[in-house]
Image 1 (cartoon, rainbow, N blue to C red):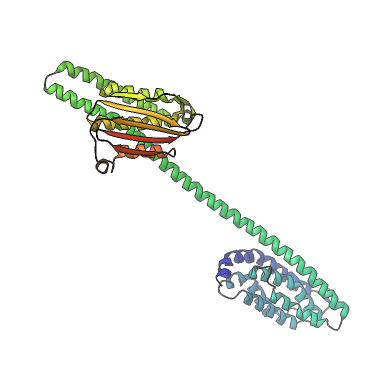
Image 2 (spheres, rainbow, N blue to C red):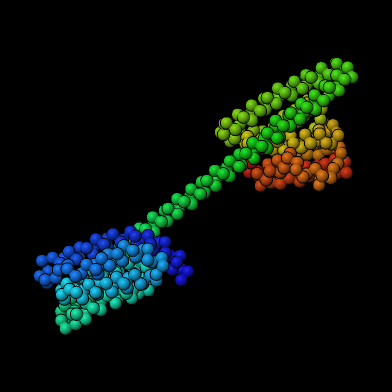
Length: 396
């Protein structure tokens, strides 16, 4: 029963698509039966009720199918045809039953929706014409041949209609799935872009503003102690940091606008040396770089790797209470490993990792390239280990 209900929407669509054909066919049959060409003296008077009943059943079968067993509307049609045929002469009755047989067969095939199951109602429709012609062997075998031919044509028509509607339905479902997939891709793409922008804003602009704020605090301290020469030096440095921030912000905006730049290759050593130079100049942090073999990295991937180094160095400036750090870059086949270490203050990972956007950003940048991030507190200092997957030719 559940399988029949599951197939109902498709069956109803097929019946709705063929009911107008069946109605037209039935009206044409009656026009022939009651025409002078039959010479049977049959007339329409007294046959209006079964005629209207059959027309109503043809039109309402897709609706009745939702509440009644599938065979019942077809059986009622057959009963109405037999009733109407009983009111006609033998030639008219034979023509009506023979001509209506393909319509009954196609409707029942749609309802049972199983070619292995015989259409019992349509088979029953063949009995009255065979009984009528039983005494006339020539007519009897002619009707059998006619039933065979009509059955073959009806099965072919049924398969054609069902195939066309199934292809239409499958196309609609495919288009619906594609539409949903496109909306999901657009949503995920927008989410990914938002996350990318948030990471870059934190790791570039916010970091630089934090650095400028630290320099301003030093300027205030020197001003309070009237140490003006030292204050002027810090002012110059702060002004340089502000210019660098503007330059880096414009570079980031240009990177988002020019997508083709993401495929350009840059030197990994030069990229890391540039960020190290900025920290040495702006914060007085001495950084030792261990990178034996340089490699070419795509612009976007280099940006992510350098930002991991930058965030780790900024954490050293803010939290480690030290002026020295070590950056080591190694490669094992397709695995690139960064190690950023200092010998300053250590920390409890549970107290700083939670809700720390910088560390979260570093981890997301590593996972973006099927890598990982680990932070190891040492007896003196902290070591950050970030891993990235790279190609054999050096491209991430």
